[in-house]
Image (tube, rainbow, N blue to C red):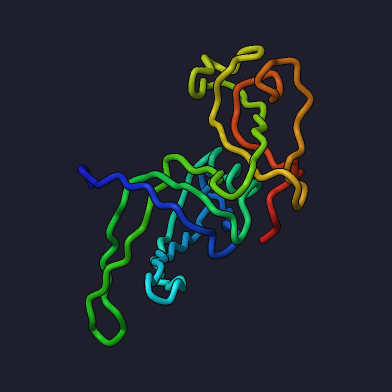
Amino acid sequence: MAGEPYITVVGNLAGDPELRFTASGHAVANFTIAQTPRTRNQQSGEWIDDETLWVRASVWREAAENVAETLTKGARVIAHGRLKARSFETKDGQQRTNWELDVDEIGPSLRWATAQVNRTPRSGGGGFGGGGGGQGAPGGNWGGPPVGGGGWGQSAPSNDPWGGGSQAGSWDQGNDAPPPF
């Protein structure tokens, strides 16, 4: 569908991303982002939570594998992508619409956390400014997990000033494999 609106959603992951592979071998990670607006009651001084927005999201290929290795339930993320409507009919005949986000870019929010950027080696294809993954190319997709929990903050050996391996790449949590299904 052409002309889909691009939006940015900031919220917390409602669960760990689910990594799957298509029959043709492409990775896809599915996850839900929960965003609850809060307002402060001026008279009582208390914070009041409004209704939670639940956004089902998916990301593809290398980014899917990076998301599954890096982000976990509860992580605060910033996701940018195309908003899509999926209409369907329930068993009792009611028309419903679900809103889904096809994620183009995602990363941890640094408002209340810190992160360390680790680039994973990739073969072929240049990322942002990467020019094909050459030696010490200061490019790739940026992001990274917060330092200090669950194996996060591990960095790959590097000889480039950007602190991440010898080829352009993406996030790396330091895990050896995606979770089993």
